Image 1 (cartoon, rainbow, N blue to C red):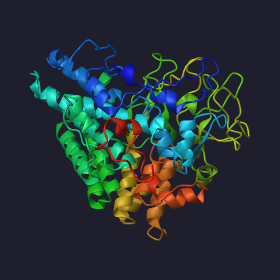
Image 2: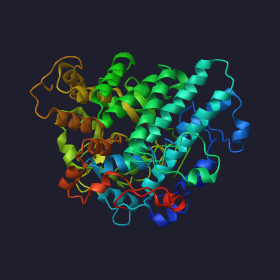
Image 3: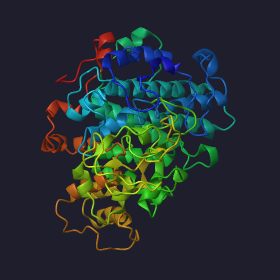
Image 4: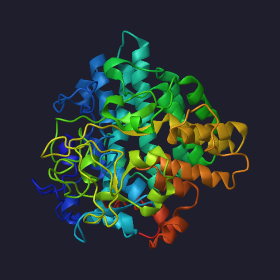
Length: 523
């Protein structure tokens, strides 16, 4: 069912270099939001083992929501949008990092990745495929969440706890999708029930940001009340009570509600049972997925897809890999060399900060097969590449990385707490735990690397720590926005950013079918 809605760029098979990405040809493969919301519903998820992979295209709303198994498959479908183009498999890293001071596009030249170039240079239009797909993919997830929240209460369960779990997962995921939408686009339509007619969707108007945040908070509190503390076995990776609590901390931080953010972060730190990995790099190993520091991550799985940005395998390994470097290539099809770290980011790490080597390949670094990173590459004049999501050669002819993408980690809870309470004893200890781990020091033992009450511009120090800790985890653009630093930071890099660029354009394809959707200023 979703194949009709998916972006299917025409990439060259074999060498792995993206062909010219035409906005016109790409957009004709997309249906606007009203059609997507009416067509969605019963697609099974396709992520880790706990997600069912059998198609359910023959089912309809009327005959589907009958059993506990139906409820499970419908809940899995809400997760299924996370690892697709438009969310964590394609668009979000362009928004979170390429549109920030963390990275620039790279790639193969003027005709390569035009849709990414627009975001990198702040020349995007309302027909940009990345921003359009982000909007539509998030609303597909919201629509599937709405189906669960409306229909699962009518199913008889042997155990009420399981029914509550599915409802809590749907509420958490709806909040997550709306959190990304409201930060990117500002006012967005608040859709809380399944659409029944084209007219229902084609008449939607944009809901003020404050009301969207109120619903996000309501959904997260609902999820907290229903979700279990943890899972085992094949259910690892599903949203927990602590996933929702951590997201609530981040939402409050984004709103500037610092006491509330601190309260939620403290709850996660004290009660989730999560602990920091002693080694920062352990967060980004396939064998450690959904591990001791993870609060929520997007699940990916290899061996099931080839050239597609719609999962279940992740494309970052190939897209971010050194472009056509190595003999054999260091990534599967030669690498595209997209998302190139900025020198300013590289220079922000001290030489003894272990996060540098875990996050970035720089000239002279050795790959697992013994090859050495060169001083420069096509589109990459200083020889920097992202290492954080590198898994090497997965398959000689696909993008199929199995490595999950973290959305919430315990380290971020410490940083949220530090930002929320400032350079107090509590705040200093929180940020210093993250710093000690970064320098390979005992996490709970004071060190020479600790920040102190005398640290100048503590808020800036926390923001800089977030940049180093969370680089390429899709956060930096949002951090610069919420701290009012986006425009001066990007202008300092020579980018022609304007004040209206703090919001993305409402997709023109949506406005074409629904004139009630007003455009953001400047587009």
